Length: 331
Image (spheres, one colour):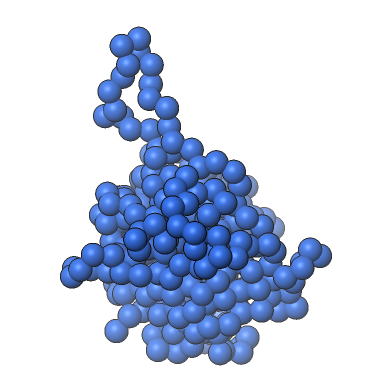
């Protein structure tokens, strides 16, 4: 049984410029112990899609539809009280910026203990504090007992990120959502946090959604990759299929923008030019009628590109699913 099954997720936001179609028909699954990486440019709908799952979008502004089964129960059909009980033991989230997601006027210990007590009525404050210290030790924070009484500003960026991960994992969630969990951290700390999540995932069988811009992280941690553009999934498949055999022009553009250390250097020592994706993503209030990528696409080899939205279809035959949404691929 999958930990999470998302089917036709759609998110609309009311803005001064009109309705923003931020997520448009997103469907995917996350299995036990599986890591699904979600990649794409800023504004593609990655973070909004997971915030919608957990009911963290403003109700007066956002309209969410579709279905999202977490261990068989639909998150999108829950009331706020039920969602509060599910956040924690059902799904934990590591937000983008650990400095702004931690309360600056509360100690680290109080913030971890608060989450523990909210989901276990039989837990005493003393037991919750001991559990909080164990969690900080588990995520590799030195001197966890002392760290409990420190404020977020007294910790480094990597240490704050570990605290946020400890809070997300404090109730042993079935699903962990990591939204840019390694952004703004140096590569050494990035590697430590990735190793930490993989270890905790292996120990607890947690399903992971890893949102990132870093395709190097994707290659090292993901089992499957979902590429988003304009609020839609334009390609998905195993990490080997998507990174080694990309089909959608947008996926090729993302991968082509990465430096290749094995590429031959020119006779005068010049470095090969990197591929770029021209133009800007379309505003969600004015998405193209056809393929959402066609205004920036270097191929545009089909007349339907501008008028018909390509479906997400299976590529090749047999094996694990590898799908792409582009008319060029279909031909």
